[in-house]
Length: 337
Ligand code: PEP
Ligand code: MN
Image 1 (cartoon, helix red, strand yellow):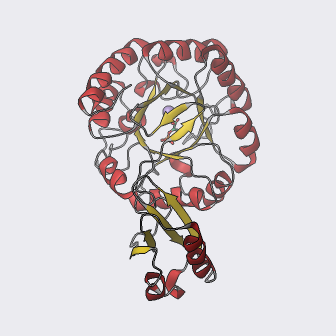
Image 2 (image 1 turned 180 degrees about the vertical axis):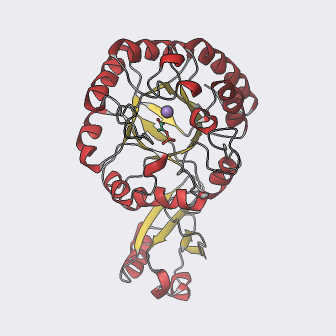
């Protein structure tokens, strides 16, 4: 349930109303916007009498929220959320461009790529240290050493870093070292991990699960928000469909859908979405055109010899071209890079 308050409602009236509602064990989430002040109710609202609520003079109207996600719902928070990733705002007018290797391989590799993508205009460095590989025999990432090398690349460039966490056991080290903690597609419904990430304040990049519906994806965001961490960025990275030509099917329709349903920023990863380096550029352009708040792109200095996902990685030169293209599209849709 959402309670829309009249302009000029006094704090005393709001407190009174809050007491009435919380007496039924329901949590109150106040959002004070420029045009509108609302109280979002989270929990079992069946015991809250709507007539009693509407009898308060400060109440303009009440609305019922049909969707199971509440804090992630745009009705709860009509304005776009802008997440601050170590000084880089994600979700505002300016697009977020996260670029870097699938996996951190060496100090020279990650720092070299970081410098190149920064020069081309990226504002966040990506790099996997803990890799969720289908095969247990495949390269699993440099793990803690990989995080150290990412930190060194941040030191060299000033770019904030995003990296994937796989286990709640590593929470402390990620909180200490990483600016944006990525939850990969395979862990989108690891609810214990999501709850733990909800208890910190670090921004979380929540990738869409391989076969997750938009509602399931938003419910996973809700797990993080419900625990108190409001800093969630969503990432569409393609879903499993009957189509096998591409690694996944990039669901660009999910972008306007998420924008309508939720206030959270949403970006697109055309690298994992397509699995093909030559398709990254057109899909990055399309992502910006359809209203995404940014993109995440895999960039490698030597894709043919990359230890992971070389076939979908683009070179720094191609990345510079992608940047030039999406800058043009961004201007056409009222955004900037
Ligand atoms: C990644 O970004 O490196 C990754 C493994 O992505 P996803 O979880 O989307 O497959
Ligand atoms: Mn990858």
